[in-house]
Image (cartoon, rainbow, N blue to C red; front, top):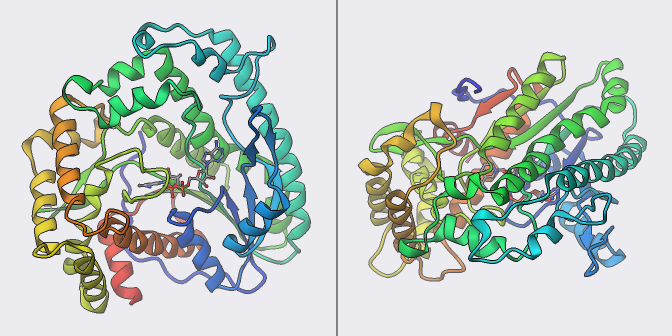
Length: 437
Ligand SMILES: NC(=O)c1ccc[n+]([C@@H]2O[C@H](COP(=O)([O-])OP(=O)(O)OC[C@H]3O[C@@H](n4cnc5c(N)ncnc54)[C@H](O)[C@@H]3O)[C@@H](O)[C@H]2O)c1
């Protein structure tokens, strides 16, 4: 396992400027982490290039974006999108006999899934077919990107891909039991992870979340060699998660959301960066704080660790930034509730004796248990209920602050990266926010 390597000092300035190129390897969603990096790239005057994962037709086939979708996506990104589908994973890729993993899942019932047996030969064929499809398209995407990058500029590739839950109807009720179930309706994540369905998810997460970073590094080699041979820089960043230090009481303490089933894939992502680094490639995984995005929506409770960012802002100097964010948060809370109420509840939860085993770095990723899960879900629900409007919540305000600070930290660090894996904990995020106001 990677040695815990928290970033403790704010990075120096980056030298990116007009004409340098920023390539986003993943799609951009309104509240996603990538917004922070895209904003930084724009601010530096970099040329922004994006990709698409494509879209699935109702018959299951993968297609590029339509003209309208492309125009809309390019407007959101503020740059050209190479319109060749780069969906990773293999859940809908067919084996030699024409069966995709999602087809195998179709016959499984909610009362027999624990003992369901999948055809692993067929799954392995699908996995290979998925990699072939992805690699074939990636070759074309990289050719197109190569043609858009002139000589004599610096290039920053930013990997944001994560996911891979197979798109089969049976999985949603099961995952809801694992992530959101209580009492009779709870299934421990370890039970799920040990079944064939869990194993399929694990293989799929590896492909989407980790192996795509390897493919990005491999397939962009010609661009890297061309740019570096002229004395310019090529760097790669990826978003990781491997727990995060937040203030519990007055002490920054490493903690993690459980059950983070993507954790094994995220460790693999760190290994990809470390191996590339050893070959002289400037690839860095930035393990980031928990925030609320489209991708984290399933994980009710992940956002509780975000609240103490307000305490970190106080500890790291406060000032105008703390005042602005606190005022914005107070505005979103119900009559009679302040951020102090929220912070006291979050601290009570994070300091609960039940969570002690979940503060152990060496045994990560942790599976959940009924007591911890119930505590997390009831605490999360009561804190979310403090917001006036469930569609406009404190977590959104704090998430935005985090992804902006993280984008700035990643952009600047990528100029002189220093290591293949960093943790951006609440201390450095708060200091960046305070310094940037
Ligand atoms: N949200 C958090 O709390 C958190 C914490 C630490 C790290 N991260 C990481 O940040 C990155 C961005 O995630 P986010 O939370 O901002 O959510 P997001 O939903 O905005 O981004 C998810 C990204 O994954 C891509 N993606 C999804 N399925 C894919 C597939 N099958 N093939 C290729 N690409 C696919 C999407 O295009 C998108 O770029 C991810 O690597 C995520 O693991 C998130």
